[in-house]
Image (cartoon, rainbow, N blue to C red; front, side):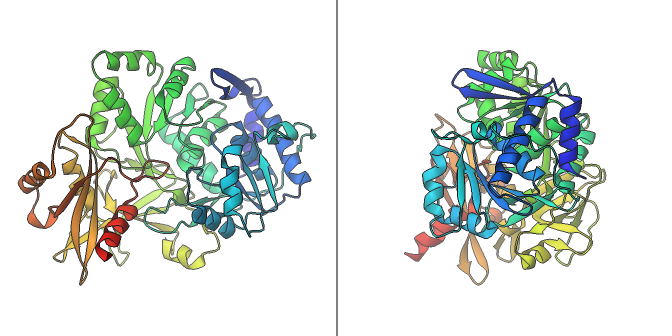
Length: 516
């Protein structure tokens, strides 16, 4: 599999069709056809090569969604170089420094707003060249236009790495997952088989492109099909991208539970009709991923908009999609069945496969499983069993029909009195309380391998409830060992760019407080 050859084929077949739509200034948009996109990719490749970028070089991309991200990614791929997309929401310079240093990135492409942070983090590192997409002097895409298109791509093998994506680090230090031509191509094609997308579909690239969910599902898939990608620079505030949904008659809406919850909460009375008819009228498919979708949010969204949400499951290390609910056979609470070419199993702590209905760790095998963690062979050996089975770290079950149900993260499991408690199961009950908007449950170490359950709650706007009421609520619904011993109401939960709750942050705060 060769993504460069696939891109050239798609661009030739659909040269006159719209590939990208993006905003150039508030209220002003530009559109690139497939022919225009390919021309800019080839010129960007020539510009990179003129400054010494070649096979195997790692180049950091610290960018918001936009044509520069797409052009640079495909241009680097033509040279056999490796893109290192960086989370632009990283504010800790030590974290940014770690990723730049670990990846060995000697060059970076960024925007002016991120340049000071990048330069501060790169102090003392061999970062030789930084290009800026929107600088006052020689902005990258404009500069690249002065080069003759580099028409020939470096020969590529299926196992050649295309990108190094750093995991979110919700449970520890990030690791760089190496994704290859085969990983990305096979995953995009398998999702197309499972969902039956067409070139007539159009996508809204709302989630950040540095994350593999958006990149594979909202960029790679449509560009392989010859479909249209409408690029949003940011998922918040919602008004600009809601307007894009309507203006460009977007048919595929991919997002995360947090945004579906936002829309469901906004859809009250006439607003529901206005949102559905005004913005979601053209949408034929809503997809959710990256975090668990609560039944309450799914039900509220479906009631308001008339759209069933197709939930899927995957990880950065699986490129990312591993399972999807078939749109015509969605099972409530499930993340679906394995996509074509991928196998999913449930194993016990010894790695033995368990029967349907048994709870254990989810493992994944297929061409979507990463090449490994960059410069970390021990972590790779720990993550991938013989036979290519990737250990997800998630606890789940498979039913008789092969539908996967995710219960919790293995590392989040809490031990109380020698008994296992999965936070997600406790959170599900807490979210059923009408005053609760969000919930996060963690285990606080108490010594001798024991933990104390603590729940953090974010209340719905205008809700009035106190800790005593929630303790009463829990007494009526939980066995004593599953009952939170502490409950704290907070204004918001710490989250990463894709709205996954950072439980390690909550846990560490509590540990630090108790150490004082």
